[in-house]
Length: 127
Image 1 (cartoon, rainbow, N blue to C red):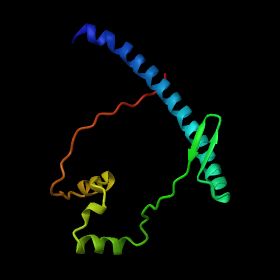
Image 2 (image 1 turned 180 degrees about the vertical axis):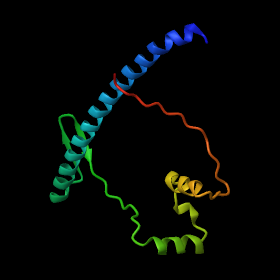
Image 3 (image 1 turned 30 degrees about the vertical axis):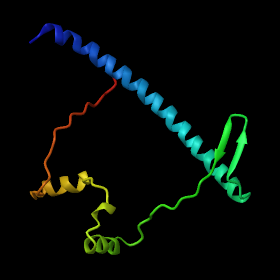
């Protein structure tokens, strides 16, 4: 066993935990600010819509509102039929659902074209 590495490991762990704690605190601050931003955005959009406004200036800048339409699935069976009939798989994201794949693996089912990769995580317990 390398004494240098083993004596450095507690310092590395302390540094990791301290850095993680600082990041988590900043994440919370960022999440709180994002929530406040979203609340303000909803109010501004509402005021813009009420007044038929598309742009408004203030001391710190100008806010413009654009309208766009985003797709929303209302009947997945019809969508799946369309995708199959028209070879339109580009309508879907190319991503595996981890829980569904793992459930099949747990049942001993092998899925062609699917492999695995090792992911390492660390858990932290405060002393």
